[in-house]
Image (tube, rainbow, N blue to C red; front, side, top):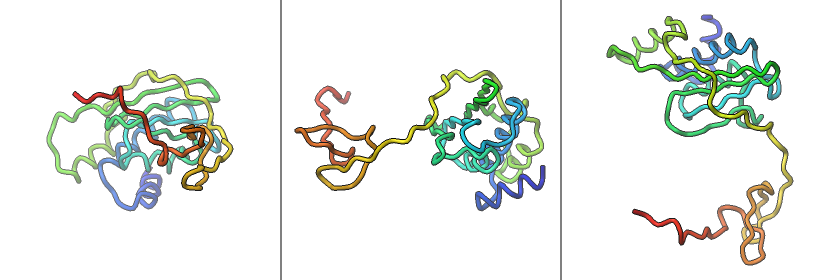
Amino acid sequence: MEKLWERVVRFHGHECPGLAIGFKAALAAKEYLGCDDSEDEEILCISENDACGVDAIQSLLKCTVGKGNLIIRLTGKSVYHFYNRTNGKSIRLSLKSSKTQMDRKNYKKHLLKEDAKELFEVSETNIHLPEKARIFNSVTCEKCGEKTAEHLIRIQNNEKLCLDCFDEYKRFYVEI
């Protein structure tokens, strides 16, 4: 396990509690889902944060945004949903609150030595398995001239526009 931790630290650039959380989550996912890493999209992770732990998941499980098997659902929680498309298993890991106050260094040590069952609330995921990543055609924005994936093009005044050039209609989004 020490060599795996060293590999993850090299990938991330430094040691920290957030990286340790993702490290333990990835190891737990491997155990619960009965998998190793993901050559294509066999393993999918939906992370509810974009913090350091996501790097451990990328390093250990080969879940990446570019490959389409790492999705960020930004809620700011230390919650990770993992799916094994091969055997249909899924797991939701939610970091439990620590009952004691520790400095960052000791908290990281605590996370690394503790069993995942003590660190996380473990349940089946409550998010439906997303479809596999698609490859979309590129469409040129008629205003700025930049290419955009076709599913993100908007039509305005009979022009195909990217999201940056599209003037969103906000009349019904009234602030309170």
